[in-house]
Length: 95
Image (cartoon, rainbow, N blue to C red; front, side):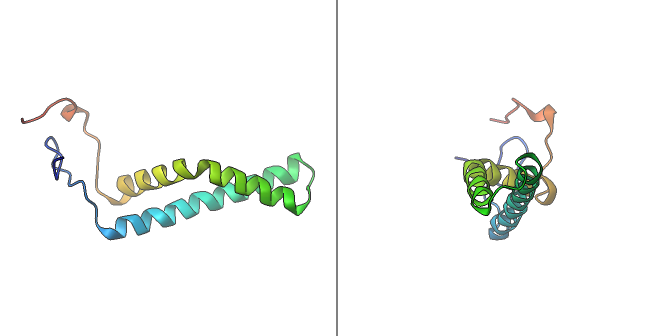
């Protein structure tokens, strides 16, 4: 595997802080899911017992964990990594 992209020059191995930042973004996503699930249960299920809240939130967050990790890294790359998509480089390789 190349160390950087042959078309745009993007280095593939980000610094260590990238993963720490993505972890905090993933935490923010999880917090939002917990809040939205709690509000929806409160209003749609007429304030069920606490065990229903805990079970529903845990199930949803665990089920969405792969997506949360992926999209947290995408957000980190897009907003803080300086990576921009250039459609003119698609399919072009200097090799």
